[in-house]
Image (cartoon, rainbow, N blue to C red; front, side, top):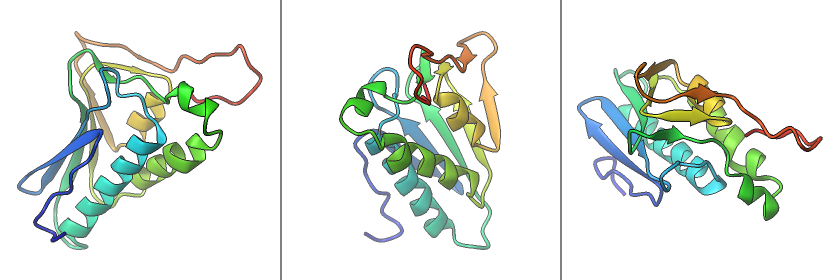
Length: 149
């Protein structure tokens, strides 16, 4: 794949507008984070960094695909089949965004719950419509396990 060819993904889309890249989350209505989408986000950020190069100007915007939800956090159903889901995808994704050398913006298009909060906070800037959506770090405290919601 050449640097001019933007990669394709299953659960997100990537578009370029000059030096600004836009990642649109597209995993169902709520964009729940599983290992697959987290690794796709990492792959997109790595592609953007390689494409822009070390001395260019640029930025990344991460947005949801609808006005109701930006992201509703970590997909708890995946924990039943993969107890390492957070360490295989979620935590490396946060690290990739936190360590990214260009400005990042979380465009919170709707509700942002649970594990989506640290996902949003890992970006340099967060923008949310004050008339639409809630942001909340709610958790299931019914277990003694450390759970990112």
